Length: 193
Image 1 (cartoon, rainbow, N blue to C red):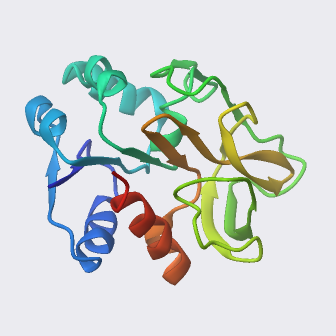
Image 2: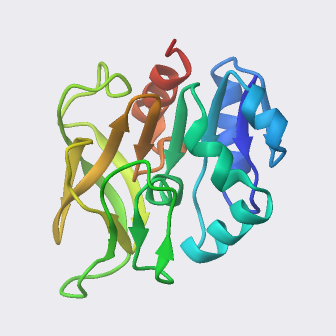
């Protein structure tokens, strides 16, 4: 069973539909035990950092998530909340990835919205993805580049498009809205051991 963390974000159903289309059973949940016992966990992301962290704390999920051993995927805000700190709402995050989340400078149009490609390194979830493949982004905050960065996107400045540490994976883009190549990312994640 694939647990999709339900914290009231707007795109949860699109993530669920994309996963089920690949042939996997899902459950939308914020239940501590259901998340702990899931085969894999997806943390989708649309929303605001401090509000989402408040929800996680109310459910004690901020204590659970860092202890999970199964594959865990954070999408967009979900990736950002796996970082140390976010400038959005001056928010202490989960501290899994050793980078901070910063607001884009407004030298160009923000939010970053649309299709961009990645410069990738070796990554399990980017298997069979080409540098010219494009992914759908929509965000005003970005994850810095650090030792856990597994791909980079450049919009205004270079930032972490994906992060990876042990069983934790993050994508700043939305794989569920990125067509066939996004499905490939989800499939790579869902087939991890």
